[in-house]
Length: 107
Picture 1 (tube, rainbow, N blue to C red):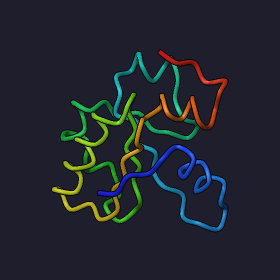
Picture 2: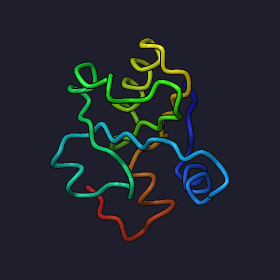
Picture 3: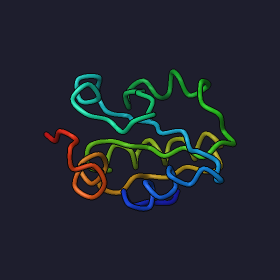
Picture 4: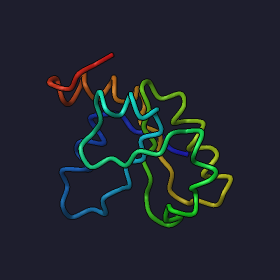
């Protein structure tokens, strides 16, 4: 598992020449409704094992949560399931709001 900062992820998402990652938001639905990164997909942490087959194991996946702890656990789980390119967003959506999108609500 790799880690990526909010600024690094923003640069990656802006680069049309690179393969866009799956943005996997593992927070609870109420958290996702408050704020999320555009283009992200919601899959609460406790549902990931039951829905792991919906993810593409060879596509880059950036795991996202509030501060980066739950997403790190999900990223480690995905690696154990054979996913080859799993990345944790360090600092989560909180860091995204602080470093990339100052208009994003925080909680």
